Image (cartoon, rainbow, N blue to C red; front, side, top):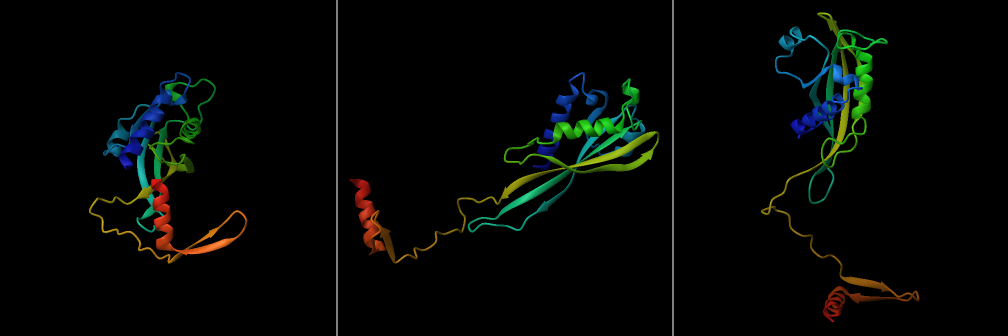
Length: 193
């Protein structure tokens, strides 16, 4: 699931980068490389790197299966040569602030996988400066339901019937009680009529 979400974020940002008016068209957008340090040394322009951070999970709920709400977080590392873009934006002077704003606009409300609630930014801030680049991180989270997998060989058994009688209330307000077996037999014969 983590890779699916990472890829969906990548695709969403790259789709926005295809618009000539988008500031994202002036930076590279990639999944965080395994060799980030060496990749950074060869970087000629700004870049947005996407990577998984963590998952926070709720206590399981449910009687027959474990149902949890996961909050999955991803960081977008935004690395540019400038803080501010200025009036005449080019590939050489793309500012981190504008990239952060655009990334937030594109991803807020995005549902990266089926069943996900809308993504939202949880934090952003400066992380480092070096080698002529400014490094910022924008953290996004998405909430997902998680339901345990069950197979046909599950050890689940239906709950035993506990009702001994059924009480009916007529529209006139009068109530009457019948044994559960008699009620079930009457409902079954009524269904076949």
